[in-house]
Amino acid sequence: MSDTRAQHTPMTVVHPEFEGKVAVVTGAAQGMGARFTAALASRGVHVVGADIDADRMRATADDLTAELAAASVADKPGEIVAATVDVTEAQDHETIAKLATTRFGRLDFWVNNAGIFPYAVADEITPEQLDATLSVNVEGVLYGAQAAARHMGPGGAIVNMSSVSALRVRKGRGAYCASKAAVAHLTESLAVEFGDKGIRVNALAPGYIDTAMTRWAKDDPATLQHALDVVPLHRFGSPEEVAGPLLFLLSDSARYVTGHSIAVDGGSRHV
Ligand SMILES: NC(=O)c1ccc[n+]([C@@H]2O[C@H](COP(=O)([O-])OP(=O)(O)OC[C@H]3O[C@@H](n4cnc5c(N)ncnc54)[C@H](O)[C@@H]3O)[C@@H](O)[C@H]2O)c1
Image 1 (cartoon, rainbow, N blue to C red):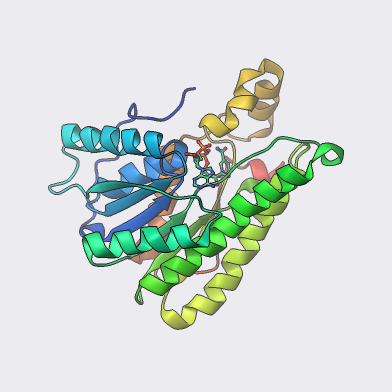
Image 2 (image 1 turned 90 degrees about the vertical axis):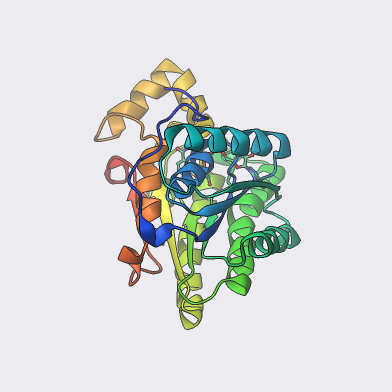
């Protein structure tokens, strides 16, 4: 298993319904956010990829643009624009929303993907860890959704990154589990309120996905074996396997789906 930059073949099916649309993806410099960006751009969606790591975001945008050009995955792959955002800052979201609408003239999709995972058992979680986790994982989603709703018209779709940790607790993840459960519930609240605007809000709840965030589990053989034992499909998922459900939630096929979390976890929420 390895990290995810520029070494995966993009999915090659072109969906005309996506072409010319505009998305913002946060946490897009690596991991799932980078592959979501590639999946959208390969379908002709223009993407503002935003991350707190400005250098890595620029490098990833360049890599993905080259990857799409080499693969010729769509007649007109979407443009990928790198932006800097700290998702804990509400104003940053407004700035990237305006960048999207100024550059491309519209905003259709917003993926609140940025997140952090501090491993700490409950009696050792520090106030700083808790603050940071809730700030990035929960405030970041709320501020992103607020900016999206200000700039999207009816038909817009927001997807928030929750986690299987919202559905099933495991040791060492108290702050993270609480934050992702909050994202799941916030997704439902936003769906109820933004329905009036014709904007859908859904969430993805991934299990073990092969990114830098799960390196702690992969680096320790015993932890890795335990993880593989408890996942009914006995493997980690790839970021591409989460991009598929993301595309479904953003697509017209899901036009009557809102306030829902889709688990993409190899069944691990059941064990
Ligand atoms: N990897 C998994 O197994 C897994 C499982 C369930 C949920 N998730 C969630 O999926 C999302 C993506 O995870 P990943 O595995 O790709 O993680 P990752 O660590 O590979 O990437 C996260 C990205 O978010 C960015 N980021 C962190 N703090 C930020 C901030 N304040 N502002 C802007 N960007 C910031 C990082 O720079 C990084 O590029 C996260 O919300 C994570 O909690 C991951």
